[in-house]
Length: 374
Image 1 (cartoon, rainbow, N blue to C red):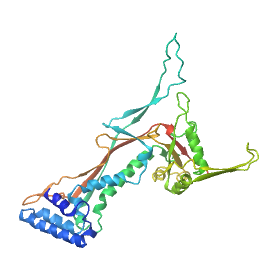
Image 2 (image 1 turned 135 degrees about the horizontal axis):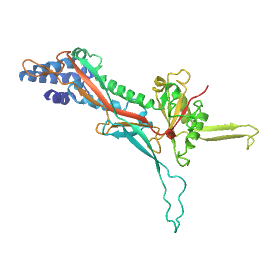
Image 3 (image 1 turned 45 degrees about the horizontal axis):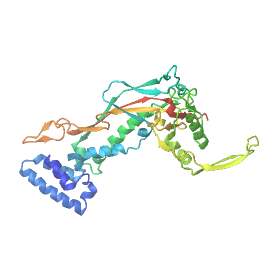
Image 4 (image 1 turned 90 degrees about the horizontal axis):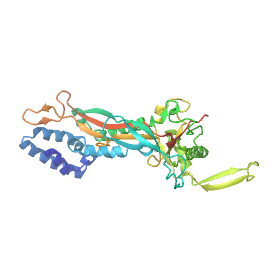
């Protein structure tokens, strides 16, 4: 604890990079730390002193001795290049048991006029149930003493980002698997009968077809139109530029010179109706849909999952909604006093990242998938 506090006092949080230690200010900080090492040795803290001395030569030892590693993990987790948090609805679970999310369907018909003889009409609501379950995901990474001492390039400092990105990528893969399968749009979520499967290329006209299909969605009980607003355009990496051209165009020009139209030919320029859509790149689509026919052609239009009916839901642990980082307990005792940070048998430190996560398909009304035929 003394060394942790002193390292934070001398170097701050995340400052002691190899580059900084070569500067005049860094050299001054090293001198201050070395003075502290001498004091540690005087009090019998020989191992702690040697450990800091080793790390001072190469790695960012503030990660080794402080909670800065967890802070970096959280920052990298929250800024990871994934988009599933945008188009999935977040549920929270307190147990690992499967549980149901209940969706309320609308009451059929219309509100009746009050009849003084028969009283007020009693309506009914239907419900739909979607099952979701929290599961455990974890990985252990071992860092040897030799790796830390030889860490000239600051690789140890990148460990939080590597772990955060891998966990985020795992969650993105699981969530994407709810709307995509090996042959393109998932066959259980998208069907032509439901009206949420189209065969258009990703163009302005294609997005218009998808938006019209979403606006035409009707309640399964009442057949009344559901208010579902398109919000996200989810595409594989190769379609990102094309998608951005669609949503970032300032104006749209529609030209039809056909003699059979009511207007006998027209040329109209309007503001882009899809300027409010957000393009979400998803590189897991091509990893899940391996069919060469649709792998790089499919795309999806999703509604806001927090408004109306989401197509996909995710659940996290209500007590620990974000990943946790743990370190193995030292099991080697130093003769003369103290515990070795590295393991007795393998001379390394084990770090474990763990996250409780689950996904489920919810309501097909919330997404339109396109499976271009060409």
